[in-house]
Image (cartoon, rainbow, N blue to C red; front, side, top):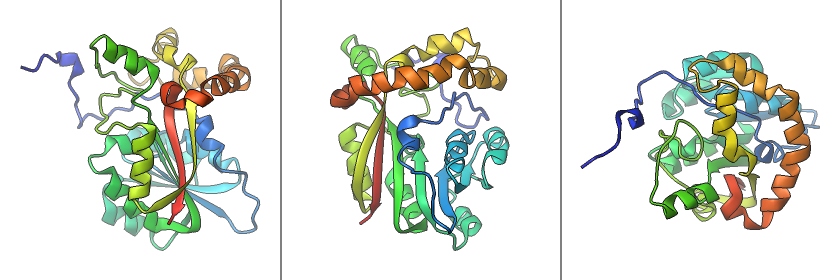
Length: 262
């Protein structure tokens, strides 16, 4: 018998975008500042609100984004050079919109876990990668310490966002994330992570900033632009990163895999 309460049900057809996006440090640092004479091209697959795309574009790249959510695409549009508003699984439409363009970097940031067949999608998008280009995959780490504690006490509960986002279909560890990338026909050139210490308190922080209220983008921006958040990135994040580095499977929030086509 299913004992899931009504509040745990997933409405896949509901237009919503409850995510508190940030320019993930572990992902952004995989892309160096662009110095070449020709434009550096980046494709951000399922770009969300364009937070990552904006950070990459500030490094001198031309960024294209693909996003299904109308609300997210509308907010992301000014932050990048081109927005393709469609579902990333609409492969024919995506191919038509991209045309013959190829990219130096293709980013899959926290999207593959939402797909039934992430391998096929990853393989298809690799056709848009330039020779010598890199694909960057970031997925949540299901084996993070908070999940291990929850399982120890018999709990496996979905929430609105984070590692246990209720719309996640696939779950990854460092091992399975690397296996996925290799199965797509790639050679891995690097593995990194973002730590999960202060982030574990994000639900409390969201309540403080009233970010749990639908459509409250103003307070979301207030948090990301606050002096407190900037101090966290400057002083606390580097400490967290060093503390968790040798135990990444336990303390990683997300798993970052960088690869080239084999």
